[in-house]
Amino acid sequence: MNLKKILIIFLLSNLLISCSSKELEVDIDAYINEGKQIFLNKKTLDYKENVFIIKKIKNINPKNIYNWSQKNLNSQNFIFYSNINLSKNSFKIINNKINNVIFHKGFFYFIDHKSNLSVYNEKLKLIKTFKIYKNNKNKNLKLIFSLAAYKNFLIISDNLGNIFSFNTKDFKKEWSLNLNVPFKSDIKVYNNSIYVINTNSKIFSINADNGKINWSYESASKVLKSKDLYKISIYKNKLIFSNDFAQIYCFDLENKKILWSFGLKTENFISPPKFFSSSELVVNDNSLYFSSNFGELYSVNIDNGLINWSKKISSINIPIVYDNFLILSENMRLFILNKNNGKILFSKNFKNLFSSQKDYRKFIIRDVLPADKGFYLFLDNASIVQINFDNLNNYVFIKKNNLNYRNYLIYNNKLVIVNENSLIFQR
Image 1 (spheres, rainbow, N blue to C red):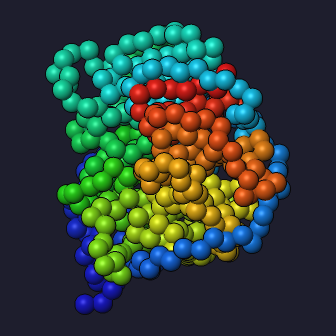
Image 2: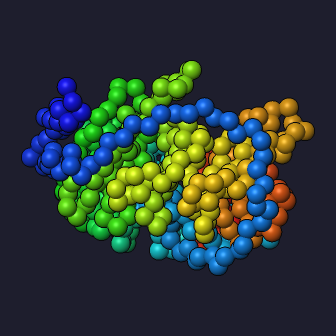
Image 3: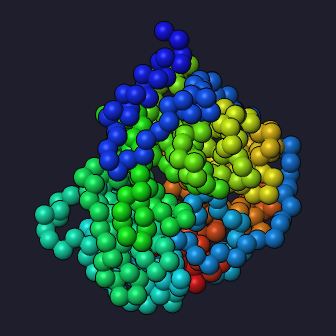
């Protein structure tokens, strides 16, 4: 049986499972003729030596970030270099078991695992607090929420399969939608539509104004799943998303068809990972950047799905684009690559940061942020390390504590660190 017949059978089986009156019908011929499905193999990792082709980086003009209305700033997960400076500021801590947080039009919105939503103004004064689920039937369940803001609406999805829209002026519910299957991806908002993926690897497009389903598409899915599977990025009417089958899809939102897809394999692993986990899908200048626990970092042309370059770097941390560089961390190693050709320009293992501590191996770099005068490295124990642009081998500790780091956001050129049990605000 040739490849075309196999692909037709695969698509027909998916369509029979997923089609309903509200779902989008995908053109099979268009998918075969225009879509490209590529399977990529994992190669052996071998980055034991440090690389110092560059010793410093030019400090370019930072951007002013005034809103962080969805996770990773925007629909394309492209985090701008900001004007924050952590060395001269103090911090305020709000103790709360935070599940998710955003900043929109001068207000913080954060929610915990018990569905308690809190609203603070920029001066950290509590404005409003209320519970999404007021009954007690979910009291023993750990709820997981995603947040996004759109115009004057707060959009919330959860692992019960519900999506809500609240008016941020009076916090009355505008609409709600129950789709039964848990949602696990972040919410992305683009051109008046909400995009979210459930645990069946089914992506939904929902009208942000009224909650009606525009369309949905169900891709292949596995029974066993990890927490870092479902990623979404949207750029110039191209929707890129991943599923738990280690597949990446690119969907043309204007013409309503699949442009291309490819799948990753683990054939060369001695002990292959039990689950597929991916970094965020970052798009910049028509290129998609992502890496995974399958062992490769990729740059992909989003127009045709062709691979610009790949490197043997295994990470699920978000790739950061800074000028002509791509910055990514793997465990305690920091990589700086040429974003156009993938050449590694700087690679250093920072494990000696904790050489005086017996348990230093527990600490790994979770995130990287290019800022005022250098890169900030966020470690999973919530320590922050600054690396200077003028000397990439020069680093200093900005903050040390014993809290468990989760992520960060920026508001009005100030930083918020999200830990497991607290929010740390830069004053």
